[in-house]
Amino acid sequence: MSLPLLAFAAMPLAAQDAPDQAAVVETYANIAEAAYGDALSTARDLDAAIDAFLADPTEAGLEAARAAWRSARTPYMQTETYRFGNAIVDDWEGKVNAWPLDEGLIDYVDAGYFGSGENAQANLNVIATPSFELNGETVDANVIDAALLTDTLHEMGENEANVATGYHAIEFLLWGQDLTSDGPGAGTRPHTDYLQGDGCTNGNCDRRAAYLATASDLLVDDLEWMAAQWTDGGAGREAVTKDPAAGVSAMLTGMGSLSFGELGGQRIKLGLMLRDPEEEHDCFSDNTPHSHYDDVLGVQNVWLGRYETVSGDVIEGAALRDLVAAADADLAQAFTTEVQASLDDLQAIKDAADAGRPYDLLLTSGEEADTALIQNAIDALVAQSRSIERMSGALDLSGVVVEGDDTLGDIFQ
Image 1 (spheres, one colour):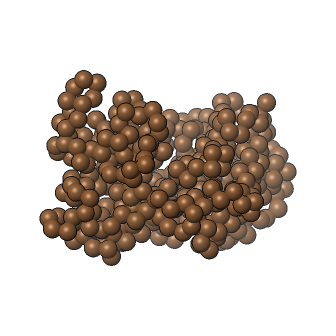
Image 2 (cartoon, helix red, strand yellow):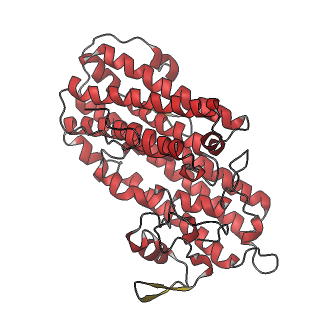
Image 3 (tube, one colour):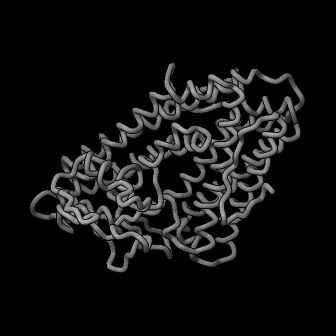
């Protein structure tokens, strides 16, 4: 009989026989298969909602597409712990979750928008520009299709801010820019931006619809590919299971680098240092607190060897937690407590947003209580990162590299 997740996480640990490393890695691969499968199924739901909206652009249809986008983020963000330790994920991830982006590349923006400041295409607005110059050559963008988005626009000019595909491009096309940082309010793109013919607002509604439909189709295609990599015989599964010790190292590398350099540093600390609402991960939708929480939930999933699917089924098996507990029960207990503390601190940020203080307001207000909410989460992520780094020694593993970030300094020296 399976224990409830919180009860399982709270059970005190004692020294025990270590589970087989191969079994732990098998659980890791099974969770990846289920989580990427959920990301794919919810992306298909999003694609269907977008198709329905574009067929009949109404405010209700736009809200349904936005709700589907939010739902699709939940399982995907729980897969981010598979980054950093798995080359197959790192080489692919930029197609679906690259951030931050210069949204002026895609569509109209506020007159005061200047993008990242070092991007010649930051205000291209390809939706309104069927032909443009790049490196002295004329680019024909008359037809908005997958080739234009992936082969021409995405990371155009070798600039990573030129993000043309993935969740955030779709998010921008559903919400538009969020120009409110002093109170509740995400982007307010009107449904009339997609009306064909009379009633079209902001021009080029046909091209805007083509871009949104194409980006949504590409997201499904990309997730289909990644989900297949974790099924039996898939390259992702094979890479971690062929050498169980290397597979465990990949688990720790992914958990540590996501917790520290990526989430604690680039996605949270940098925004707090700059007091900049543009440094908000899901900045158009104000979904950031949920995405941050789900990132750490993904770490906990890998740690406990347990994942609850969107349909309510539970995938579980031999856990990294038990492998570490056999080597160092105190360390395992400490991390179990620390990752739950991170979730609690991120839940507090979610609660603040639900109470009318969205993440961009917390970043910019300068109020001590708002800053403390974010700093508490950073401190908790740093604490769990230290424990992850210690696990490599406890398990006598080489190859574990926790990526750092200049915003946090080098805590591992």
